[in-house]
Amino acid sequence: MGNAAMAGRALHEASPARLMLGRIEEASARASDLCRQMLAYSGKGKFVVKSLNLSALVEEMTRLMEVSISKSVVIKYDLAEPLPLVEADAAQIQQVVLNLITNASEAIGEKNGVISFTTGVMHADAAYLDASVTGDLLPEGRYVWLEVADTGAGMDAKTEAKIFDPFFTTKFTGRGLGMSAVLGIVRGHHGALRVCSEPGRGATFRMLLPIAEGSSATASVDAAAVEKHAPFGEGVVLVVDDEETIREVAVMMLEEIGFATLTAVNGEDAVAVYRQHADEIVAVLLDMTMPKMDGSACFYALRRINPDVKVVLSSGYSEEEATTHFVGKGLAGFLQKPYSPEALREMFGQVIGGGGQQP
Image (cartoon, rainbow, N blue to C red; front, side):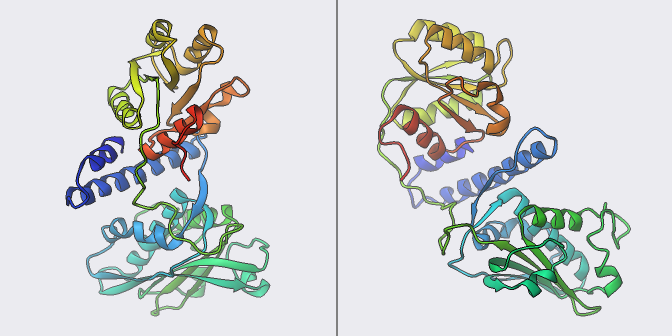
């Protein structure tokens, strides 16, 4: 992700390669989200909840969805814009969308058919919410909704009553976990899920999510174009990571915003470099998991040399998981891998001060 982002910055805005590099970043971000999701399920991470635009999320997944279905199936979109934001974990909502489109595609089979994606805003009263299959008591109010409809075989009432049961499947293959996962994710987001289907007339699934507090209508928070700021960094940042690629990318990002850099390949190396250049180093970007001396031991060794050292911890684990041993110990900040140039810039703008903070 870092290499693609930096390569894109080096190209002229009119270069066709920028579009392809952007697609690499998008695909990498999806892989990153999947890794975070697996870490969360294994108890080693935490889902990341942020403000999302459902219409933008569906648009971003268009290419991924189109390769997930039969070539005889056409996808149609009717996405509302502007759309109020919802508080949700992007990876989980993407999983809902993929499970619903997979279910719809399998219902159509090898025949020609249509899958429609529609988004909108509605006021849901108690009666409407009570008809939800989630079974939770939800407050009346305004909800953002996403509807996935297909022209497939449809379901009778008996099948419809069982589709969310774990391991239930009407197919010879598969684990039957897709729809139960959808239900679990929607419940986890305090949302509702409604189903409408008849044999021979397709099926429609509508997911409702509560509107984020204070949200009216806004464009996607993951805007593709980010304004390029002037360099603001002064001094030397020590980059500590046992992976050469990550060190190189971090160095490029930091030097772009004005810092000089030194590197270390593990904790022991970092302590030695810091002893030699302590007067020049203004901050340390420190990996958590390394051989010989890990990030935790390195942090305390650096603090013994300089109690005021500014250390930004970097890890693929969530902030909660990675910073457990640093609570109240003076950690300057945390960057979750993989991080973008903008995320690194904002972090060091806060840690060092100056013009790096995003507006």
